[in-house]
Image (cartoon, rainbow, N blue to C red):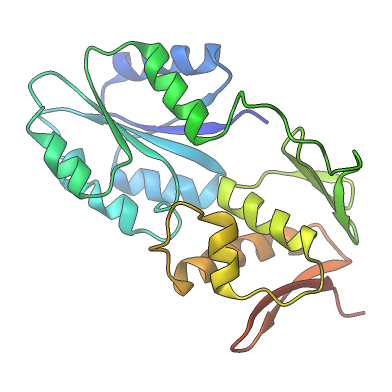
Length: 233
């Protein structure tokens, strides 16, 4: 599945140009006209990264802090594309936690390289497992070499955080995993993530598994964490 990239822009021409650049490089762009649209899109689709089209005549920079404060969006790469004349927004964007800023004009290759690096695309593929087989538990199967997950034989689309959480659970089936351990597995570079953020992403992962799996479920262990276990018969 091609990575989904949300483009927050109110300029149709710029969106079409950027969409073409992303599609040629193997990404799937999706339009969001506002920060609210981005938040809704991330809840509905497995968005991999967010691009902000920041201009002097819009308020995306001023509202960008809402993205990093949101539990679902905060862990995703957020990159600002700043138009000439809007350079004053750079400090505001960086203070809000935006991961990277590119001031136009910029070489598209630099943006694509940044996205591939943040999403670990184009790196040496990992084997399915050390012995070449996929990670599997009950009717859930994950292939690390192709980044695909299937559940009861049906492929499911997971966001990057849910994928990492499920991977760690498949590597440690039936073991109770603390929230701190899950943060280390899915947010290795973001130690500011709190327990509530973990709960939100586990809830999203649990919902997707419950829609297709009859054998596997994520069990909540009070005051301890979560465990991937067999569904109660």
